[in-house]
Image: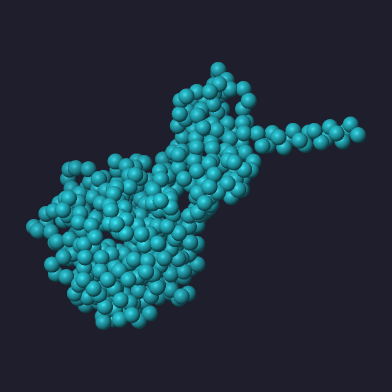
Length: 485
């Protein structure tokens, strides 16, 4: 009987210890805020995100971390070097049990004077998931090594990353401009530039290679955006020049000299345009459909005079579209950036059609080399425009929405000023944008040595179902020529 009673007491003690919110019992407290890298503090995080592994940047001979929330067991971690590697199964369980609750990191450091407890780091677990995957292109940050690149997909719920396609199997041709219809991996496209040139389209389970350039277009088709019906893609057709600065904070400048908008019908293999979106007076670029497909948003500028690029500035425009008979309304200005000496790029509309986010810089539209480029939001019901509180002193560029409109990903050079990294932030139901955080990696020191840039981050709802070798095979085929309407 005594043996049984003793066994029960031991079990109770184990249970109590497992639920204890402190792995250290004898410590002193400090007011000094703990420094961790990446900075995962005061953020709203998705309940399905991979573990936010981090490094403690405080001097100590030993570390303890307790991660806990309102419900479930505490995750207790020991570390000798400050690297906090969170067990993924325990992390997933804790987050799943605490949607909408606070998430705390209690961090302790040991020195010759004993244990010190730092002020707790407090985060919030959102109720809404982020899309499970992120698609992006990886390449070197300069222009010299552009021929070593690939398009990849990362499972945001784990640390698994796979290539969608790498250009080493295509004779190092450029692969770019990947795009998905309404965040769906089932409907996508990308371009191949070079000897295997063409546009690869995956739709309704079928792979096609097309040559979309038709007579009358200023250049190739770029900056794609799928119509919400998944049957058409809007493109810009641009005549582009590169310039190289000998001084200053950027050394590459890319500018249009002619650009028009076109719409490609995927099913009919037909390219259409209209005099209202393909004018001689203006350069039109960066098309984006409204979620209901009734409007095409884009940016528009006057062409440069005498190659004076610093006077090229784009306004935010929109035009009505009737998909039934392919007719257009009249262009209207949504945001007059030129009037304040600024230039708009990359308009992107939330799935509910209420909020548009764009990048704004001093001039031009190639914002990846503009340190002053920041993200702004437009309330499309009131047209109120304001800067988002997620910006830094460095480049904020390409961005995209999650399928539920609660999350946004954008590329930023804030970490090292050279390489763009994907950052996420939460849009709450009141339209407030919360503090951004960098995409988590298994090794929290990963970004210190990874000297490539993430380009065109796109949130998608699952893994791309097409195998890489099928895409490679399609890319090696001769393209079918599109026809002009």
